[in-house]
Length: 184
Image (cartoon, rainbow, N blue to C red; front, side, top):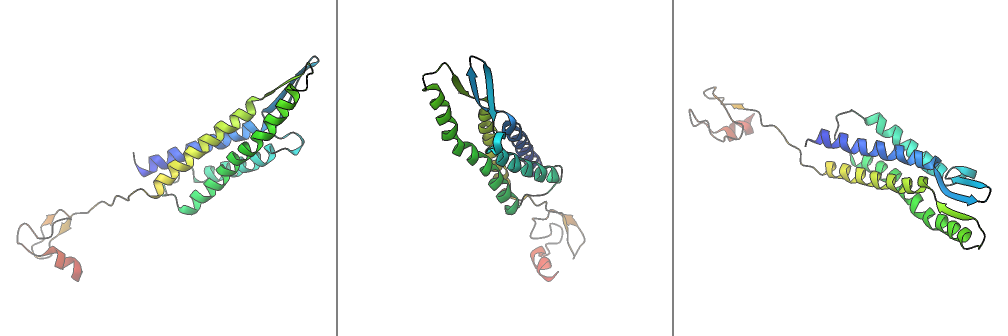
């Protein structure tokens, strides 16, 4: 797999993860079921942490769309921005973990006929965080990947014969090509 293919793969992972996080922000994080029906509370309701997720995911989505299809080798700064935005989304999910489950348990333990459950939006947020984390690690592998340099054939300055670039001496006349490279 080439660096370009790996870069496109990491970009796709980050695009998918950011899109999933954006969807998760609007999805239900807590669902309350009563005798009168169901009510869901999404991450963005009442200015919740889903708004933070939405801003982080939107920023990551825009940045990744800007580099989508551009054949370049990712830099450490790009990786840092990807890591901070992805980490912020995953950190929001982890920090809200206790808050969401405490609310669900408080409702379920109240002894009333009401029941609460964690909504699909919250589970999707964890899945998006995992996809983003994988995308960042794939991109990290690209930064430290060895660069492949094609060796061009060289020509002997003494006899003009072409030969492989890694030859130190001309096969035809025995001329020292290493010395030729130093004087050039």
